[in-house]
Every structure is written in C-alpha cells, then in structure tokens.
Length: 119
Image 1: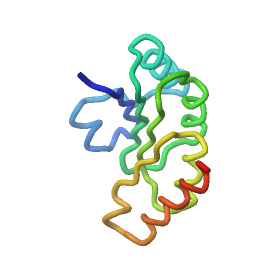
Image 2: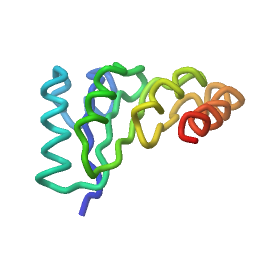
Image 3: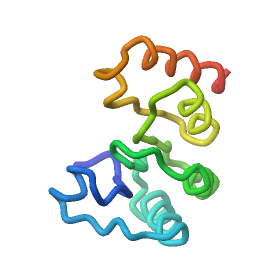
Image 4: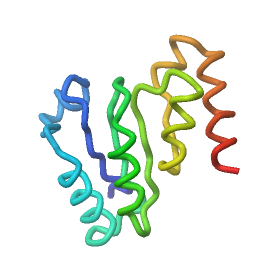
C-alpha cells in the first residue's frame, strides 16, 4: 500500500516520461489533487515532484494551505540554501536530489537552511 500520492509537474522528468503523467496542470488542478489525496484517500503524504526543475512557490504555498492532515513533501531543483528556505516556508519536507551529486557542500547548506525555517 502506498503512503504517498505524487503529483509530478515537470513534463521533461524521467518520472513523468516513464509514467506518462499528465503534467499540464494548473494551480486549481493541483489543489484538487491535493484535497482528494488528503480528504478522500487520507494519504499521510502528498508529494509535489518537479524532479530536476525548480517549482512554482505559489503552487507549493497553495497546496500547503489546502492540506489539512497530510504532510507536504517538495522535490525539485533545489540547488541553493535560498531555494530550500523558500520551499521550506510551505513544505514539511524538502527533498534535495541532484544537488547532492553536483555540489555536496552547497547541498548540505540546504539542510541548515530548512532547519532555520522550521525552528
């Protein structure tokens, strides 16, 4: 059984291509998916996945305001501490992907940045 529902929003990502995901969603569509996942399916995690592309903070904020029970995970395009801080304002968990491989020192700084927002 899955504990998370993914909403993939980068059409060029491997995940979107492999799963043939509909990524042409506007903010109202994403909000509806989040509400359905949270209120009907009662999933504990809703994952906004931009996978390699920095997402739209307005979308992340809207989803954060929509979810009543589920945790919001955000992943995609986090390359700097400022990116991480911006998304940590809204997401419960910020996932750092490729930055770990590209620049470990900067990627580790994102951890501290998220902690600063969450305190």
